[in-house]
Length: 271
Image (tube, rainbow, N blue to C red):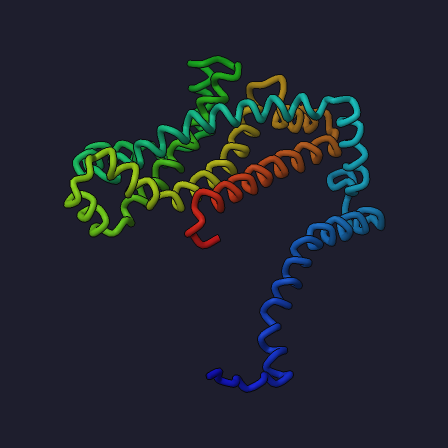
C-alpha cells in the first residue's frame, strides 16, 4: 500500500529552489567580480581619476605582459621562482609534518622541544635572510632555506594542532587493539590530522610566494621578485604590475591545486 504525499504548492517549490538559485548567483558573481574591478580600474585610469604613472590601466599592463610572453622573458622568471618555491616548500613541509605528528603523539617530546619551536617561530623569516645569505651565499640555496624555514613552522603547528584534536578514545582503542606506534601513527594520527595538514599546506603555499618575492628582491638575478624590484628601480610601472599579477596568480593556482588534492585525499572533510 502506498502513501500519497500532498503536492507542494508553487510557493513551497520556489522556497525549495531558492538556495540553489542563490548559489548560482554567488558563483556567477565570483567569476565576474574580478572582471568588474578591472573594468572600473580601466575606466578610472582612462578618465584620469587615478594617476596613470602609478596605476597604469589594465590594458597597458596586459600589453606589457604580452610583450614579455612573446619574448619568453616572463617564462624564464616564472621558472626560476617556481623552482625555488617547490624545493624550499618540500624541504620545509616534510619535516614539519613529521615533527608535528611525533610531538603530537609524544607528550615528553612536546614538553622538551615545544618551547624551542615556540621561541623560534616569532622570528621574522625575512629578518634572518641577511644571515642566511652570509651562510649560503646569494645563489638558490639561500632561497631554498628561507622558504623552508617559513613553511616548516606553518606545517609543524598545523599538524601538531590536528593531532592534539584527536579524541583520546581513538588512541586508547588503537592501543588496546595492540596497534604498534607506527600503526597508530599511520592509521589514526595521520588520517585525523590530514584536514589540518592541508590547511597548513595552503597557508604555507601563500607564505612561500611572499617569502620568495622578498628574497628575490635582495639576492637574485632572475625570478618574478627580481624583475618586480628591477622594474621599480627603472620606474617601469607596467612591468612591475605584471610581476605582482604573476606572483598572485602562481599562489592562487597552487592553492587551487592543493584544494583539489584535499578533496581527493580528505573526502570526509568540509570543503
